Image 1: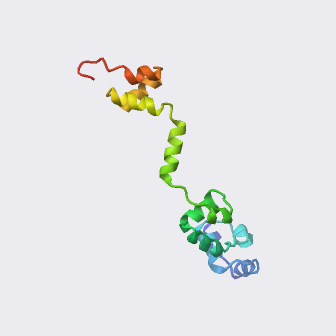
Image 2: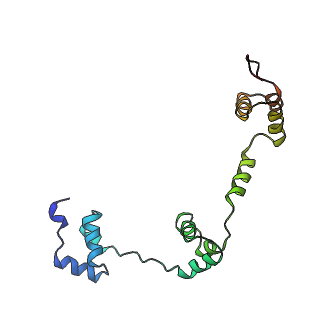
Image 3: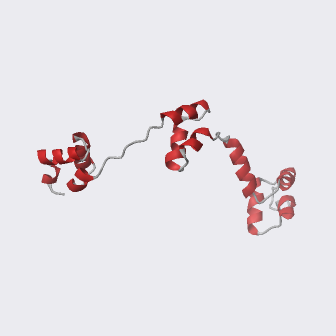
Length: 146
């Protein structure tokens, strides 16, 4: 960009004003964000939607405003869903996902604990191809172990 590209003529301000773009917006677009003049003058500003009604609903349902905005803007939820769907307890989600992804059963974990086999050892053995019963019952044969 040329140094003269940052100079905005009065005519350019007027043209931008006719397109619904204010002086400060035009200045920022060109001088701060580095937009080309043509784009800065012609591209309409985005109007924010008013979500006050939904924010009140969300607040009444115990949903934090930031959670509401994340649901709408990041996750693509409708405003109605974002304001009315209850929050899920993180502990429940972690427990549910952990149980679904786990290769071992609670019985195997309990058996390994009874045999003083650390979880890390149990999981390493399973990754190496041990069957679960053997991985949970065979003690470590190295000197000074188990």
